[in-house]
Image (cartoon, rainbow, N blue to C red; front, side):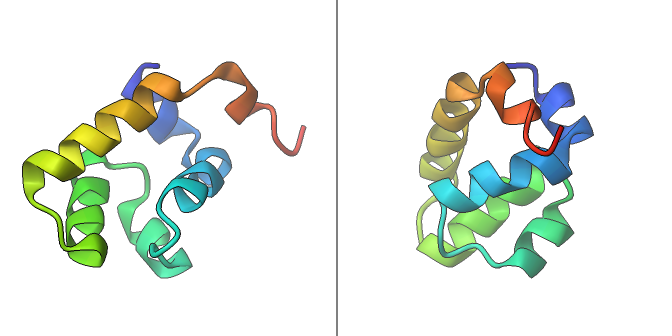
Length: 74
């Protein structure tokens, strides 16, 4: 999935991020606002993982993104 699409639809997709990383707060997700680097930083902060691990998790999550994520609330 293209990250630009995720970022552009962050309000819909942020719930999926919350499912994946339950330690992220609503405030964290609001601050991230779809920016990949910000999300990676919040994952590092909340889970105490290194940058490369946060990036690995984020890349896997992005690969699993599907069109169904964007149909919520329609």
